[in-house]
Image 1 (tube, rainbow, N blue to C red):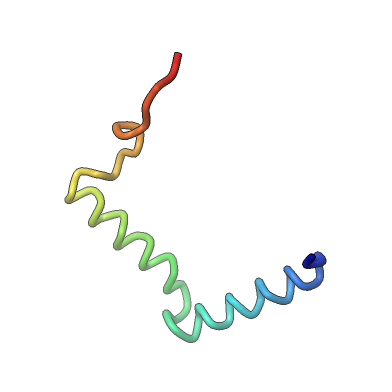
Image 2 (spheres, rainbow, N blue to C red; image 1 turned 90 degrees about the vertical axis):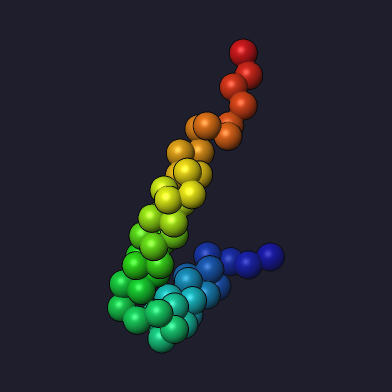
Length: 54
């Protein structure tokens, strides 16, 4: 089992890798791009695909 310190270490490591790959704020840029693609494809609003149980 992973302890809190290990989670913290891994989180920092993943952030470093993310910044190296995508640049500063790169992840946010990618998320925004995907959001725009979803809007164009008409799949942005997830509630249209979520069944409502009563």
